[in-house]
Length: 158
Ligand SMILES: [Zn+2]
Figure 1: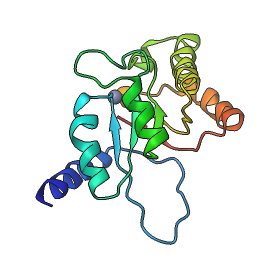
Figure 2: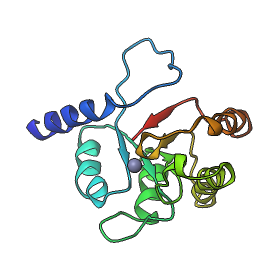
Figure 3: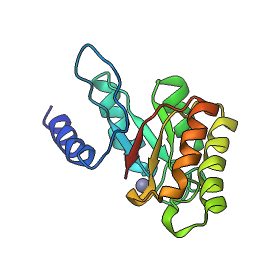
């Protein structure tokens, strides 16, 4: 139980940096557990603990980095979503700093990341901004994509 409390507290502090663009209507408070950057410890440590207590989380992943040293891979990501109901969200291909890319590069890093997730049978519906950077020239792309891909209007700076 102490471990869960520590996990919850650390997630609370982490979540305080998130900026929700629009809220979800709910009759009760909602707590969201999100994990960025596909660290192996998410699958090895957090996932079993959350399973034990009946919680699901959201993985914001960089699809080109899955399976690299110290990171979990496609098999683990697919298992968490398709078998255990976790959500997978986009986080760009390689954790690109979007404000250092031109528009076409930024759109590619976001869109191809989503395409990779979809090609593996996943259903990405949210996106977390790598390094908390979102240049304003990307906003029209997000707005357009929200309609085309039914993304939920949730963007998290992480
Ligand atoms: Zn990140």
